[in-house]
Image (cartoon, rainbow, N blue to C red; front, side):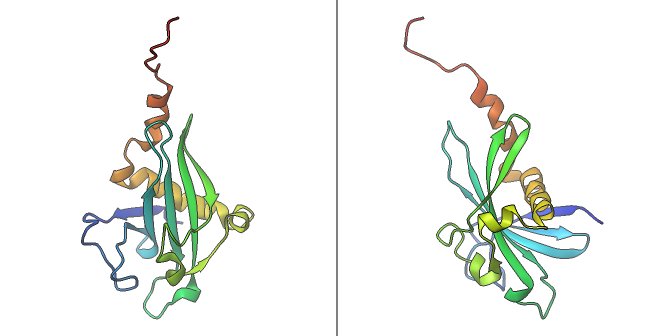
Amino acid sequence: MPGFVVHPEQDDLLASCPCCAPAQTRGFVYEGEEARAVYFLEFVGFAGFPLVHLGVAFGDWREGSDRADRVCFAFSCRPAAEGVRLEPAEPNADAFPDLERLGAPIAAAVLSSSQELERYRSAAQAIVDQDWRLAGFAHASEALARPKFSAEPG
């Protein structure tokens, strides 16, 4: 089975696709030659606690397919000692307003026990690894581990 190949949207300000226009997409995932997913990134953390919410609409994107052919899910992504920790999250309509229009949402608890969890996690990991906007995100834990300045004596 071919791996996932990620194509980040190069121009977030102008990005749109026919399925979710006029909403802005953030990137696309292919499996071999087949379009497999569209994803959205939301940077919600802060300097001491980097966090990205990743919303994904995953499934069949061939001509003639529709919402019923796809599922939507989300992961919270945080730097960890070994790369990035991907934890199932709610596909929040406020963070990812287009997801519900693109596929059937999967709640975090359902995603956690899904037979497809590892496939979905693999797609999410490919996004983290291949989207240039997340470059260095996996290494943020190294920066957080550095000694911090303290005004306290001792």
